[in-house]
Length: 140
Image (tube, rainbow, N blue to C red; front, side, top):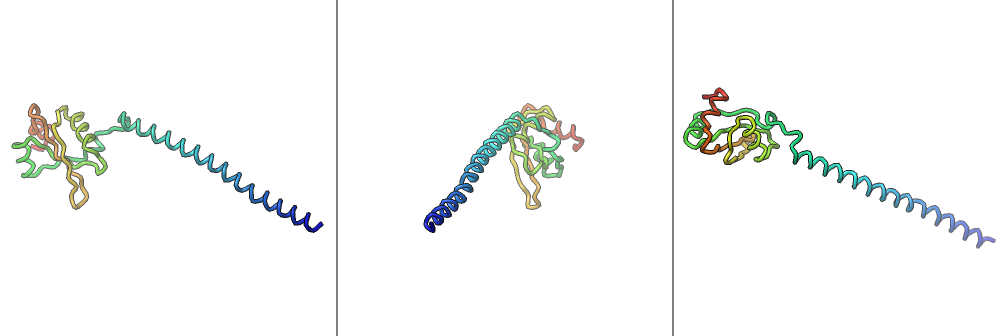
């Protein structure tokens, strides 16, 4: 009798141990589903960003700079200088300049200052004049 009781106790312990494993498997399945859902959501966000649904040129370009050195760059090299959002990419900067001022951008160089500002040196195509854009902004 004692041996039978011991056997039944062992079986009960085994059954108790197996139940948490089954629950863990269910959790793994639910984790996989949640990961798949997250992947779908991130893919949707990436598509929205590619389509530029949230594109706002006024948030990318903060303000233009105008110093003697920049005036020299405007006249000699056909360049503009803007302080831009820290997270902005070169392609975003180029697109926002083209949308706002209706000019063609040849090249964009980006520089982050020690103060943490991001500055964009924008070279315009020879067809467009940087002086015209500066006068449009009221800086010249």
